[in-house]
Image (cartoon, rainbow, N blue to C red; front, top):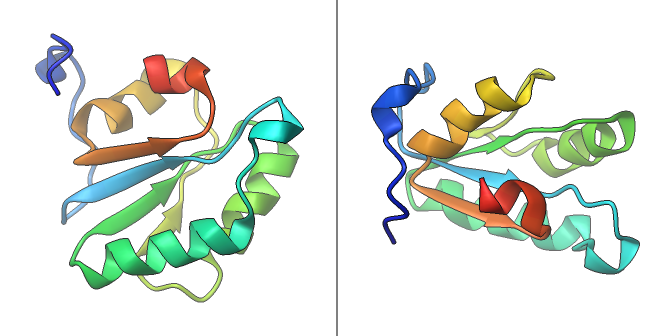
Length: 106
């Protein structure tokens, strides 16, 4: 889909391959997806020749990102960053998978 976002507004992140960005964080416990599901999806995406990047905004999300990435080559946990920096990753991702509407709307 094209939402009219000008990707050139943000410099592309330094990632060599196409990547998917997983927005695994949410403030509603009822919206959380089990870590095992995220890990399986990450392994499927990596097996297709892409990378997966995992942002986080608080310690709980950081721990979840680390658990998702644990032992899965091609999955990386991003450093903590502000919204503008994260938007660069969003703008240049091949795909975004999210469970919460906040960042998914960006």
